Each structure stands twice: as C-alpha cells, then as structure tokens.
Length: 482
Figure 1 (tube, helix red, strand yellow):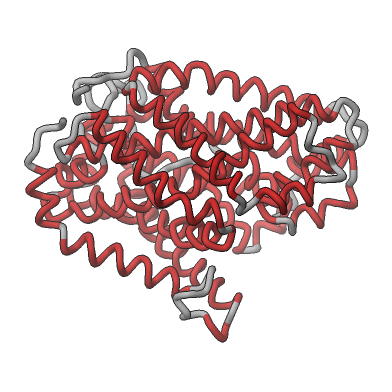
Figure 2 (tube, helix red, strand yellow):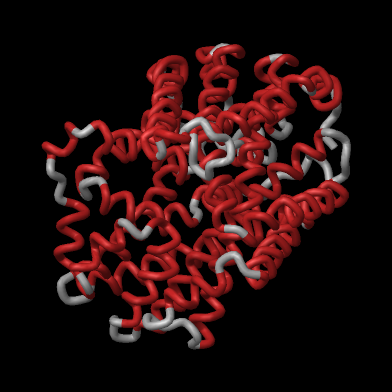
C-alpha cells in the first residue's frame, strides 16, 4: 500500500470521516450534557461553537492532510517547519492514548449488544450485570475483539475503510433515526421535546453552559484530533475542503440531536422522575445501567434495546477504525509498509489497552488526562496554521481548485484569534474545576482526576517529543510517504 491510496469518491470520504466523528460521545454524553445544562439553551450555544470551533478546525485539518499528504507528524512538519514535528507528535499521541481506552468502550458496546440479543440483559439486572462485567477478564476479551475488528479493516487500507463506512454509517443513521421516532411516539414524549427545543434565553447568561457547549464540540466532532487530517491524506486533489467540513459538522451534530431526542423523550415518557438520577449517573451509568432499565419499561423494549446497542457498537467501531489508521499512517511515514505498521499498532493497542480494560479507575484517569489534552491539540493546530500563514492557507489550500464553497476572511480571524482563546480558556477551566474537586490533593499526580496527574503525564510526553523533535524532522519530514 502506498500514499497513492485514495478514496474512490467524495461520498466515500464523507462517510469514512463521519464514521470518525460520530462516536459514543454523540449517543451517551450529549443527552446527559443537554439535560444537565438547560436543554434548549445549551443547543443554542452548542450550534454557535460548531461554527467557531469545530468547522474551522476541520478545515485546518483537511488543509494540512491535503497539502502535506502525510500523517499528523509529517503534515505538521510540511506546513509549519521541521521544528514542528513535536506538535504533530502530540496530536498523534493524544489520539492514540484515547484509542487505548476507547477500544475498551467499544468492547463494552459489543458485549451489551450480545447480551441484549441473548436476552441476558434486563432492567432488573442492569446494575449487577455492569458490576460483574466492567473491569473483568471478559471486558479484556471484548476489548480484544473490538481491536481485532478495527485492525482487520485497516489492514485492507483506505478502500477497506471506505467499504466498511459505506455499510456502517448509513446503518447507524437509520438505527438512530428509528429509535428517535419510536421515542417521540411514546405517550408523554412531548415534554422531552419541549425541554430539548424550547430554550430558556435567560440561561444563556450562565457561562458554564457556554463552556460545556464548547467542550462538547471539542469532544464529539473529532475536530483537532488528527483523525480528519489522516483521512484527508487520501482525498482527491480537487476535493472541496469547506463543503466537506460543513457536511461532516452538520452530519455529526444531527446524530447527536437524534440521540438527544431518543434518550430525553424516552426518559420523560417512561419515568420523568428519573431524569435527575440519570443526569448524575455519568456516561457509563446512563448507557449501561439506566437505559436498559428504561427499555424494560417500554412496550417492545427488548427489541429497541437491541438496536440501541447495535447503533452504539457501530458508532464506537467506526471511530476506533479511524484511530487505528491515524497511528498506522504515522508509522508508514516513518518507513514501515502498511501491514507491518498495522501489526505494530495491534500489538501496542492490545498491550496498552489492558490496564483500562481491567481497571475502571485507570480508564477514568486516561479519559480525563487525554480528553483535556485534546484542547491543547486544537491550540497546536492554530499555532501551526499561523506559522504557515492562515491567510495564505485560506488562499492556497482551502479555496484552491475544486472549491465550490469559498471561505472568507472570517475563517482567518477565527483560526488566528478565536480558536487559541477558546483552547486556552477550556484548558484553564477544566483544570480549575479539577482543583475544586479535591482541594487537598489537586497536585497529586497519582489521583485519578487531579490537576497533578494531567500535568505529570503531559510533561512526560512533551519532554519525550521535544527530545525526539530533530529525529522526527529527519525521519518523517524528509522521508517519502511509505
């Protein structure tokens, strides 16, 4: 396989990239965050940040991948100079660290789908089922199965990714749409729709709603992760960058909105008194404990529970595939052939996902450290774009031949000024929040969700990348794509 691999069509590129963007965060985190942050008011802020965070960063990623024609490390070097390899390395390592626990989550989804099909998952046993499974040896096995599926797809290259995306993504949209339609037809579902779509305009004065909306955009669209850049390596030379970015942004957020309708209408219809409990349940509690209980109270609930966990499995696997491809592409840029690179990725993923599979505490730690790390990734994209010249990037790459939707100078301002401010504010806010969670031990590097654990792990990675920076420039920056 070579760097001449390409998606066969725009449709293939869009579906593969949508598969990257649409993940479990759309289905399990978005409804909970909406319910926690004012419903309709949150949606207003969420849409605003789609246009001043997600889509602008997606355009940068597409531009880097299309122009650089290498993975994150090589494209950062190509766009921002040889001294910028460490920035692309950070983006790659951050996404890879997420892959090491995201495969565990994908395994959970597969296990719950199987249990729903077999009839072993009921509302009554949902708590016991979760407690006996999470962190067990079986969780490691399902993690390995999820990794095996993703590795197999990437083994066959871009065309393999494209073929799988053409099946899974339309199927995912159909499943989520079907579940949303079922939810709105339940008696009492109108209250859920009203909560979701009728904003309390006064709530927009709460800065936390805006910060949560920005965070949700940073975490569920995939903007700034390096995954879009990776797929952009394989886009055709006359592909329209801005149109692709807008299609992916709207497609991703459509799934989130359908998931919100599905969950909130079901909650309001079946057990409106449980909303406060579900809000406080966390992502795992909402998905793997409360949703089975709600489905158990719904007519035909087992049937719809099967489709819910099937949709969740599709979302998890398509995102996992893109993470595997990201690391594979960087290894190929370093000189490995695709299949050797895939084998290395498989061995690394199986080894480094094991602690998260066997310990929820470790998984939560990694989710915290690298989830916040994504904000730094977004900042580094803006810094690299400024080194290349944001206005030059707009003229030469974004609005180049084949562009049907030219982007104006508003984008230059957003990338140069707005995105860096957003990234810094988000990092400071989340770290300040962590200080408030445990004031006595906030700098303890061994606490699961402390500021100290973030700073310690970030420091280790950044020091290593800076030490290797010259080597990255020589090895990847000067090398031909494998």
